Amino acid sequence: MALLLFLYVLALAWIAVRSASRIKNVSDFFVARRGGSVWMITGSLLATIFGGSAIIGAVDAGPSIGGAATWFMLSGALGLLALLPFLPKIMQVRRFTLPDMIEDFYGKGPKTVASIVIPVAWTGVVAAQIIAAAKILQSFVGLNYSIAAVICAAVFMAYTAFGGQFSILRTDFLQAGFIILGVVLLAFFAGRTPVLHPGVEAPAFPFNAHFGPLDLFLLILTYATTYTSGPDMFSRLFCAKDEKTAQTSVLVVALVMAVVGACIGFLAQYAATLPMPGDGAKIIEIGKMVLPKFLMPILGLCLLSVVLSSADTTLLSSSIIFTRLISGKTGDDRNEIFRTRLVIVINGLVALLIALLFTNIIGMLLLALAVYAGAFTLPILFGLAGLRVKSKFISLAIICGGVLALLGKVLPQSGVPHLGDFLLILAFVVNGGLLFLGRVRKTP
Image (cartoon, rainbow, N blue to C red; front, side):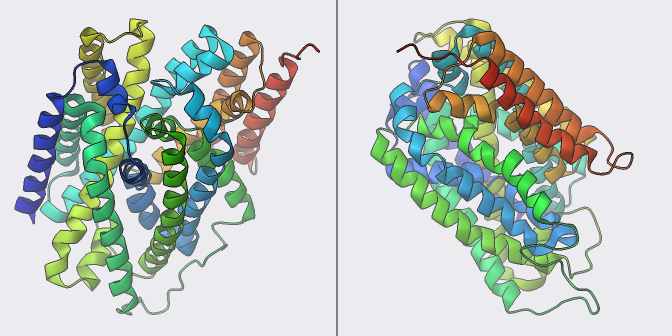
């Protein structure tokens, strides 16, 4: 198994090195010349969405929320479908990054704020992928968590820095296939292997004692909305060759997400009924219990693809955004590519440090996404809808929404009942209120 995983990483590295030879300018490195086909964009969206935090983290959360883990994918699919009415505008103004588009809507001030806040929030998402990857190596190879995290971070940084967007699009479709195959196979064999722990009842779908309607509302508010306004979703769409390609890809991806979400929910519910000691990922423990031995390598490839395919996109997106902030250039400049590669390494090292200090995948993911959603969802939707807001109000809305969302995730819940939930909702209320206050009314 260890040899197979090693060979797989070598194959991806070889693709990245070959892709590096095709990179001639900024457009190549950032958006792969905007030539993505339906299959490439669909595969890349799926591979990005099926990240370690979405699959490994959701199954790990099985003992607490059980079948309700299905909502991670279902709510994400709803958020992605909400993009459809905005696709014509997105494809019309598509740029290299989401902050570039924010500049088109609101000016340089809000772009600068976005270019600082997004990389900070997305570093937490990269850290979640490192945590997930380290747990994979723990379970399959038996490495110490810290050593595994360092190895995984090194792979992320090297693979992303070398190949840029070309290598990501070329490998994502293959990785998405491995992910879907592995999850469906695991759910199938788990359904045929009733090894439930006697006396333990798994939390059910759609709601249970640990996940109720309020939790779903907050999940949609702070998680699903990132599929509508997230920089990774836009970075995939910016690579599409035309609007029809983007539209078809979104529809296919949403359908696949619903199917895979049902499998993930079942596996999370299954995990809740099994005694699983140790720190390894629960999805791997399920595989060891229910899969025939000859299929375990497929699960290994599936889970490695899960982490690599999401980590490279997230790391590249946040690094491009920060590089364009500090470089201030928009032309085809090879020095800008070099700076982006340097930022990728620095960004990866910071994410590694976070991953060494915190090991809760879902907690880290939801913290980062809540900050992003509270800050950017409403401003981006306002811009796509053609509404305009004064620059200072946009910047204030982003900062206030992000800070309130952060407080909602980090403040202890024990002092005041539902304090965190209240602050998360307040983040959107304050953000929206500031946008309406600063709205620029069109003259007749």
